[in-house]
Image 1 (cartoon, helix red, strand yellow):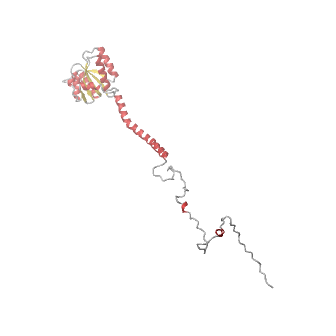
Image 2 (image 1 turned 45 degrees about the horizontal axis):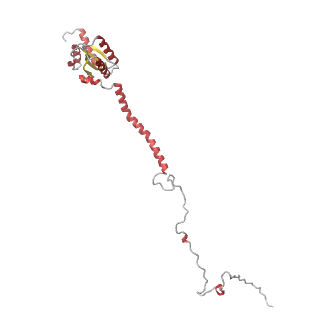
Length: 250
């Protein structure tokens, strides 16, 4: 601009500052909207955290060029810009949804594109921004993804003592670890002393030897055999020897 008027310079500075301090700026064409519709649209955007402003295309073009934003193709026809201040509570997605919802009842409102951060958005990309989940929902999903591994880890820590207790109970019920020596505690067998004799021990008892008469021959016969009587009929009286006192002859 050659010799711009101070008011124009002030507007350019204002536009430049708004772009620099905003997370997003969505450009629209509002041709055909009356005052009532414009007031309704401003209220809807304000509720979403946006600020709807109308500037001359020439002044916007000077301001954005200073910031390195090439949006000259969008600056045709009557243009109004929905800013999403970085310091506010606005969400570019919610502002884009508000524009989309308003345009459904007012086809005269046309979304031409915009700026998200330092990125230029085409008309299709600006429309697609309205289909993205809100920031709160995205943050909740992100928190859920971050919390899921921690929950799984906590579940594993809780499962370890439980599984150990189950294994220990099964081990006790089974009678101890496999390969434990018999008779030791935990081997599942009571300590006992085997008192049974080994097989064949009774046969090892020596038999009594037959009585023999020293110096008798093969033809030795007993008195019972000579008398021809039953052995029970013969009663042997014990032989007694009486010692007579010795007398001396006078």
